[in-house]
Image (cartoon, rainbow, N blue to C red; front, side):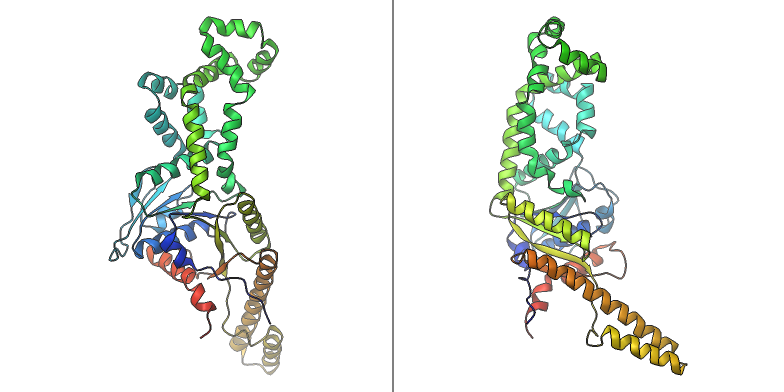
Length: 383
């Protein structure tokens, strides 16, 4: 008897979750899955917003939008007969950082921070900023109370889960020796800056100055000094959002393709979520190749094609048989890979989505994917 993993009841999650985080490696259809889930939830009557952290524009295109930015935009053309709605947006980490500064700093401090050259670089390109700003934006969206469901589409790499480390990274940064060193001159005043350099930290600052320059070091010091009053708020909000991700109402969906590397990455995500005690809803195995004639084996198909080739005059039938043999072989290989994953993670619910004949680029395509996602439970039930 063949053992099957638990079936991922997608509609049940869409009807009850408040935050749905889609994660997975690149090239597995994660953005399409996130958009399909958001659309299906909206058309089931929920006020939904989908936030993408992936800079690719596929999400906007599939929803009929010319562009996405840091402000939720309404998606037109959805079936709102059940009272649902759908907005979409893409994280702009600099604008999000700017909004935080303007909201939580006094006017003179805000102007000082926004005009600081180091801040301008930090808010646009520093490693880790995107993950922290994703936490901030998620917290902001939740705090508005405007949405029943927030769907988050994470970056297409292992950094998709880096935002789980944001509170710890931020605390380490804020409490670190580097920050204390940089704060010392800012607290002491301009002239004291050179005094500090010449006494306690001469060796350290000389090395740093040679690498990045005296002006940059002074920009960093001034930036840290201006931002100091906001440090506690950063830490508290990051921790609050992290706690929100572990709370009832949040669910993680891991997306993979039926390929060795993608399923290996999926296993990493599953294990990391378990390690962090994050609520995993299930695994979506995307772009699965199905065949209706699996009773006709690879061997029989090839034998029949060879026989037809010998008699001649049946080239089309022979080609179809060989194509069928390839499809059955591919389907069997995908099945073995999935069984290996489920053998290692037997409690993870799974749903399959069939490979689409072309790219998903509109709402109808997203609906089709959503119906396939939700059809997993029906497909698994006996007739």
